[in-house]
Each structure stands twice: as C-alpha cells, then as structure tokens.
Length: 199
Image 1: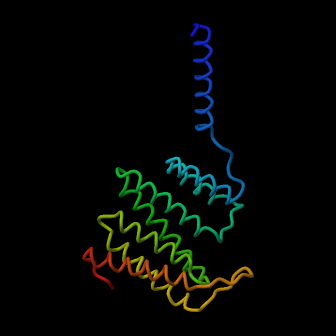
Image 2: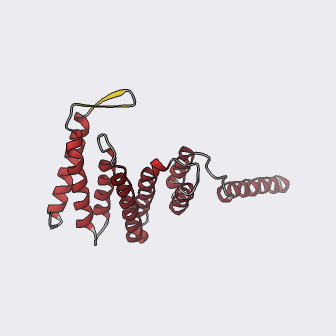
Image 3: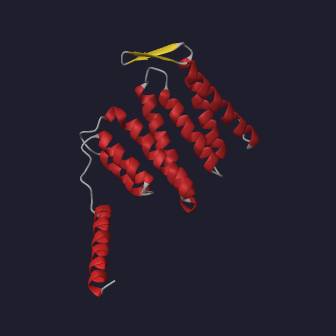
C-alpha cells in the first residue's frame, strides 16, 4: 500500500475514533419526558454505565415536569440498575446491594402511602427485587428473603378474583396467581435452606 493511502487510512480511522469518543462522552440533553429518561437508562444500563444511569433517573426525579405519582416506579428502576451492577461487578456487590435495597424500600414506602387499589403489581415487583437481593447478599440474605415472602403474601388476597379490570380492559388473574405462588414457594425454600428464621 502506498504511503499516501496509509496516511489517508490512518487519518480516517483516527477521525472515526475521535467522533465515537465524542458521541460517548458529550453530555446528552436532559430528557424531556419520563419515558425518554427510562429509555436512556435502559441504554446506559446495557452499556454497563450504571452510575450514569442512576444519575439520569435521580436528575429526572428533581424535574418539575415529572409525574410524581410515578416516583415509586423510578425508585424501582434505580434499584434494578444497582441490582444489575451487583451481578456484573462483584467488586461493587455489597455497596450495590445496599443501594438497591434503599431504593426498593423507598418504592415500597411510596406504595404504602398511596394505599393503591388493584392487584398490587408493585408488591410482586418489589418482592421479586428483594428475593434477588437475598440471592446476592451474604449479610442480609435472611432479611431480604423474609421481606420478599411477606410482600408475596401481602399480594395474595388482592389477586383472588378471576379477573381484574383496568383502563377499560379485563385481565385474567390465574396466571398471576401461579407466578406469585411460584415465587413465594421459592423464597420460602430459600429461607429454609439458608437457615433463616421466619416470622
């Protein structure tokens, strides 16, 4: 390859790398909607940029345009980012587990304050999160499994009817009952095999 082509090729490669670096580092404009913030968090989480994903949600939660009634969902999302970080980065596991637990606690507190009607889907999601924290934690394993068990049991009476109607649609509840029972039984088994005391 002649020298002129080598120089041209190396210049092209260097320019491309600089552009890619600029795209990755250049600050993105603030999200305009909650869904835009959540979409950005998904991309950041998949890229392994967990701290930036958390900051994106925390910044959005300070935005006056946010729907305050969705803060519980946002705390759950922050907790899920920390859960993913705990799985992917063992060196940061305990700190990530702690942060995830704090955010699941905040989501549960908001759920309790709202006294939400319905089938308690948040209870199932938060309970599942606590169960995952139990799998990851060494020191708090029993506490997290017990919280998960209690949330699954708390949801159980809310899903005893055959159907649930929301937003003009009717949904059967049989498959949800199966899922809740499956997760509840799994957590009880983990409590027992871990030597945890059940309240």
